[in-house]
Image 1 (spheres, rainbow, N blue to C red):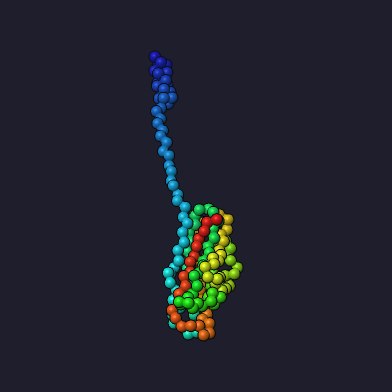
Image 2: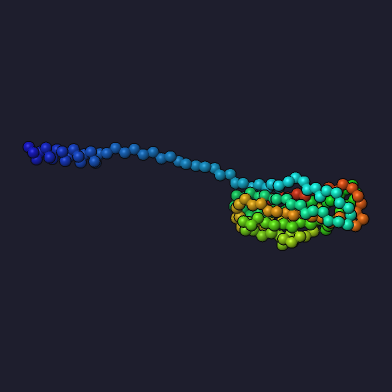
Length: 169
């Protein structure tokens, strides 16, 4: 009888191990990541104040911020409409820019603007920066702008519009 009880106890233990209950459920996780492609500037106006002819004005600074996470190459360009007062204009080669890329950016600035260089002709887009292949990041570049008012320049309130453009390649 003792053997029978031991046998029954062993069968009972074995049956509980062999028939343990298990239940599993899967949970699928997902997320949609939207790429960022944005451009901003630190100010909407540069005012060089009042100056007389045959003198320099500036410099003044504009931070140009780019945020890109598309994984594609991109460029940063600028153009301007011309420093005009009615029919009079301060020539583009008297307006200068020094472009300094963000220290963390791995692309290539246009060599023309890594030293102070004259603006391009009115309404002509000029390249400032070309990203490295698949460059992703948030960068703040600096554009230092200055000008020289030529001798005998006609008096007046001169204005110009500078436009920065971020373009995905």
